[in-house]
Image 1 (cartoon, rainbow, N blue to C red):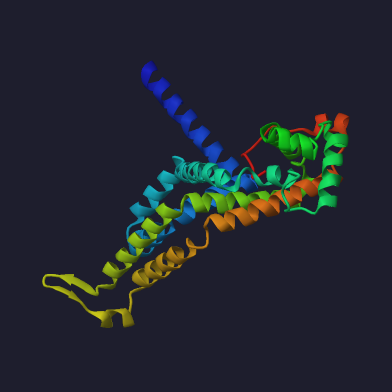
Image 2: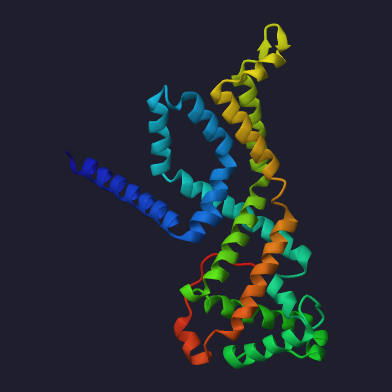
Length: 285
């Protein structure tokens, strides 16, 4: 083998290894798997079901092609697409909400939390994070500076709550990320589900074009491929309606409430700096 051919082979093997590592990491990490990969896979599920149920068993080459796509990072790409769409939607949602949930929960003028609980949280932020919280008068005089202080506290708190002892908080964060990314992928999901319904109708044999005719009796005895495709596509088309802005907001509030509750258990400033970990995906605080 010539040197240039050898180099190309090594480069290809290295790239394949990187893609495989990325895929393994995605399915090993619960956030990557549930909040990113699952929305991406659910988005294309109707087409996958149509292909697998119609040609998968009769044409092994289809299985080979799907396997090749997976090894080339198709799941990783779908997960990142869902994440990017979710992030884009989140930016618009946050503008409509008037800020991230944790930020407006900490505002004096907001009534999401009882005044006594909010006072305790402000005190804990000062004691454990070393941040001075603005007073009601300071917040009124400079709302943006106050929001910056609340946002800083939220970011520090997120960095301190990534350990195993905060598993409930992680679950809330995963649920938020899943809903956000499903909301972001919703339009594509609807389009693909609708395409799946059309494919299911064609597979049923109920439609003929020469001449144009629809035989409704065919739906009484559907082939397996048609029944599966129609069932999954219709179910997904309806399911996408649930993943709207209201569902994202509810889970954002739930996550932020759990995040603020963690103020009671996080360590003080010295130990906190040792526990701080690198960021993952931006979270709804």
